[in-house]
Image 1 (cartoon, rainbow, N blue to C red):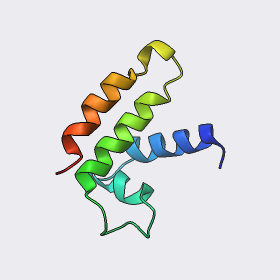
Image 2: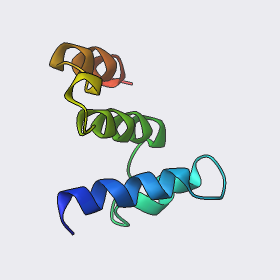
Image 3: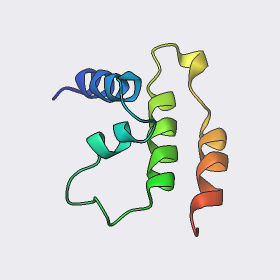
Length: 75
């Protein structure tokens, strides 16, 4: 799957019907299911999607990315 296709696929899962967290279950590698913190994974996916926004001004800076991720590092 090409990168743009992957981003589109994830966004479709997020915006699709179903419960709020069902999208996360659909995109996680089956090997990781049950072996990861879903709250942390949700934040990671959200930050990753912000980083690949088409408009460069909409993307977070590296400082913003680290500020968003670091508080969850040791949870």
